[in-house]
Image 1: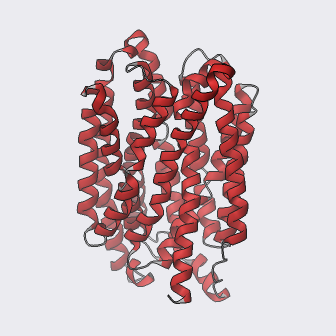
Image 2: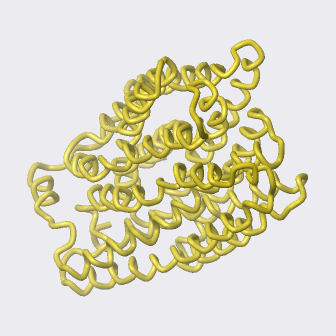
Image 3: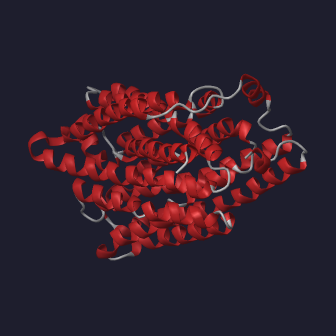
Length: 419
């Protein structure tokens, strides 16, 4: 194996590991909502679910400035410092004496997490200009592991401590995950290699390139970001809503809810690289296929007998989670390399802010149900609405196609030639 090939392989492993930690923190609180509610004395679970919404808003808001930094400075340093700050936020959350401190802690964690995607996605797209879908799919395995491990560990750990710790049992897994992330950030800083620096002239040229030179391109980009935010809203809601559905309407405890939610994500360890590889020979049709299959499973889920709920979540996750690396590859190949960090940062800022209102919205809707939240039929319309949003998001593919077409026709550097 050549030195270049070794560098690219090592980069994929390291970035995938950081990807896992980034998403552990996104889902670790999902099975802990009811414990957090009891510990802080909240009137409703909506205040607990709002912690995740606030964290995700803080995660998406700085994405564009960090995309600018990803086009200008060491991506290794951005990735390492980001994970350290993310872990520190969880350590602070575990010691929070009141809701205000908890909010400040999740904001810190969210800001730390925002370092990852602009730097990592641009880095991988540049290292793998041909098989971008496959490469991002492999990095996506890290997300699958993180999504799986987060609720599994936090739910199991809190359930084991609850008999003696009571409602405060949620704090220990949050502390342990925070400390583990900080240790991993130190190991990453030790073992990761710096990227080969760009020549000064190349760096100046990259930053002088406008993100989108025409109003039409801006329109299609904003439209794509909004449409894919509907996918994000549906996917994030599926996690939070299912946590509450399983605990309130199906009688799951914290441990079983964490296990069920972790199963939702583990199958994507296979589907992310599989569909990422297949998508390099027809990306749009594979995105349509996996999204449609996931939407059908969303609608089916609350109607199933209890013994089929966990297999349905696993199958849903197999299809839905593979959507992300394919759409990211499509986005990266629709714009020149010189602007990819900024484009991805802006994309997840615009789309993510809308999409991740879902945790608060799901909690509020369950609160409005009152005693009806104990019955499965009360959830049917919510799952149907999520499926519709996922299907509508597919219109974003047409927007990305319009961007790619106009970038090529503009006479500047095309997405393909930039690769």
